[in-house]
Length: 227
Image 1 (cartoon, rainbow, N blue to C red):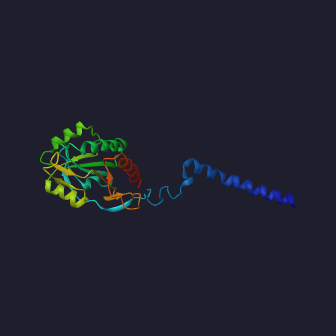
Image 2 (cartoon, helix red, strand yellow):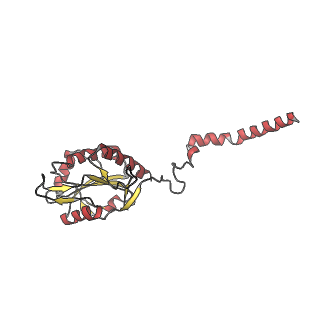
Image 3 (cartoon, rainbow, N blue to C red):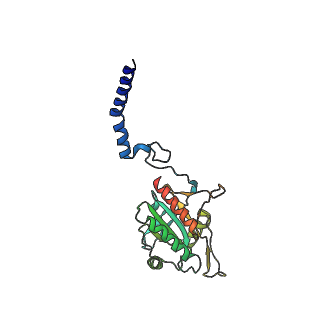
């Protein structure tokens, strides 16, 4: 009876090896072995759900870029993009922001689903021609990096009311203008997105002046591109 039991067990193991093992090997080769892992791609939409918070819809805008092309929020539809406010003659924080935005550009410039919107708060000076020269000076080479100008009143409304990122004119400060040093991150559906801070609160925007903020921004761009 023991011999028959051993034979039966051996037969079951043999059948398992013939039928199941090749399928497991194929799944490993195809990368499907972790298909049901919670961090893997969804079978329904082929995307990865990130842990980033949705802050709200980004405001609509329609402005002119350095190539005299009309660029709106619809131009970035289906793309992840970063938005900032600056001006070309800024003597203080803008050069730092430019440098850090270039670091972001270098990581994602080859991705057609990524873009940057840099909106001037001094449109009277920053014409498309001036912005094109500025882009060349700082070596902003990304195809989807648009330096935008337009009506001053509308731009300030986009900044202060739309994004709640401060921008204003102040003759008492060096350069004559003041603005936020933060970057806004917008997803493919036009939503402002953010991670949480160390206390569990929405960070909302990313510090464009500090390495820590730029590092976090890069990480979260990668997450949104995978969504």
